[in-house]
Length: 214
Image (cartoon, rainbow, N blue to C red; front, side):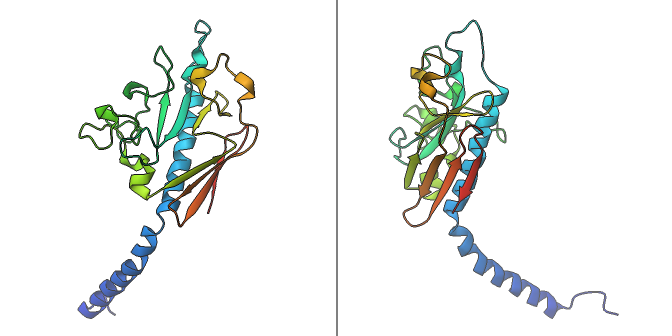
């Protein structure tokens, strides 16, 4: 009865593993857009989760609704001019709609990082600066080669209320909790592309459920 591998068998296994790795790695590299879409789906859901557990309702604050958690996509705001996104709550007294470091969500996997792929020229939010405190994976252009983003029935800014319902207006300019029926009433579609491949994320009206199609 044989109780161990021979040297020849071991070499054969190593060769087979090497061949499989060589054939699979290029395929994995070609899936950058798919990986970007899955990451974005997860982070949209995380934004919705934050909004549901941290509603910011305050009867003594007439502008409490401006502080809701939201995800904002930007390109021109970044020093590298690549598509990126930021998850934040607009808690500053001015509710400017522009996130600063202290308003940006903390990465639950690394509390030293903020959930932004780069937003403005402040050193800590500039992806090209050594003091950057964000997450390079959230810079879709730099990390995954995303060159185009198109939005249908929504804008580059999506917030959520305490029920997880998507809100598509700029909260900083609103005067009431629900201005001009700004709850999403048609499914929002976000298409990301590298110029060759594309993926579509669909955010359902009312429920905020996010799905992906390729």
